[in-house]
Image (cartoon, helix red, strand yellow):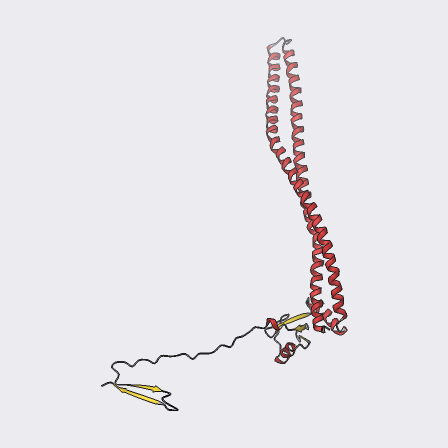
Amino acid sequence: MPSDLENLMQLQAAGREIRRLQEEIAALPKRVAAIEQKLAGTKAALEAARAAVKADEAARRKHESANQDLQGKISKYRDQSLAVKTNEQYRALLQEIQFAEQEIRGNEDKMLELMLDSDNKEKQVQAAEADLRAETAEIEKEKIEAKARTTQDEKELAEWNARRDAARANIDADLVRHYDRVLKFRGSGLAEVLNARCAGCQVALRPQSLNEVKGGKLLICESCQRVLYYDPSKEVQTEAVTMVPSQRRRPRPKVESPQAWFYRPSQGEGEELILCFTNA
């Protein structure tokens, strides 16, 4: 039967997986909402492009209608010019005709600009429609994937909840309460011992406590109150290093030295030898 410590480790692993799955389940609708928001922006851009095309079309019709009215005035002025009796009246009608013709040319220039601009705006409408189709297909794909991912996550969540409950049921009640309390305030109820320290708070363990944890005894960190555990597979293996004494070469005697002494520690059994060479 697993020990309390082993069950605690299973409990902590289950808790982490449960939190991860819960976060993922909560994040999926947000991701879909972000795509839908982008889709709404594309729809708005398309509507704006279509509205601009309609506005240009309305402006073009307005200028066409104005020119028709001006053409009617010109015809009327020309008819009136045939019946005038003075030069002043004739010149006044000619001036009105010129003003109308000038206004017609201005409207024609504006209509030409609108026609040229309408081509660009039609292209903008087509591009916005293509973007909308692509994003609509993307969001439908995301919705399908999100639904499938949520279904799988909920299935895994139920399995991990069952594992967590099974682990809790096999742990001493007081120890479970202690674990829950530390988990609430520290974010984790267990801490691994690494390099003779609590990995949760980095406080060094006393030698006796370290030995007890390594021996499998259940201990609580005196600093952070986390339950300690030790994984021998992570122990740093230190290889013995054989210290080789440095072999220093004896300095060679200078040529001009009158004498040179040499010491031999072993010359035969248990003998030592000192040699003296004289430079004759």
